[in-house]
Length: 160
Image (tube, rainbow, N blue to C red; front, top):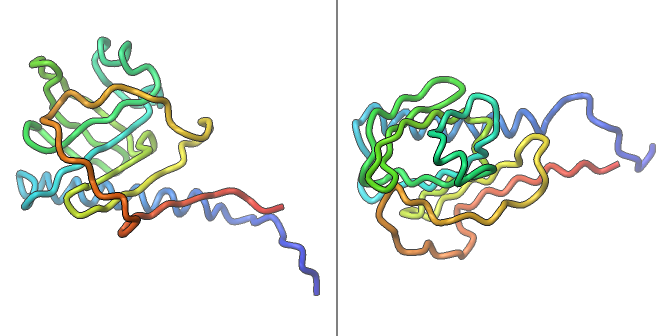
């Protein structure tokens, strides 16, 4: 018997990424169905702005050419969830905007109220995240405690 590990013919990394992104979709769908966020829950959602299917206003695309973070907490409207994307209305500097974000573009999903976080690897993107300004579409919140509880981090480096 060999200690060598074969290259998988099953795309486990893609399957897991898709399943975890479905968690984001399910959570957003529950919020849409309830007509708002329950309790103190709120979300930071970071996504790549250049992924096919992302639709954001031109001034936001210019300001965040690669990645941006939005907050779904106090002021959002028309949250709609489809199998592969979500649409939400937010206000940036007092200017309303509608954003369309495919789940494939999402790189981070955080609910600081319960210290829950999902981090995704972007397909074909370099490791790490670009620095960007704080989200401007909602009121600032206290920083979450970084004790590692309820954090799911998925690393899909392949062993050869």
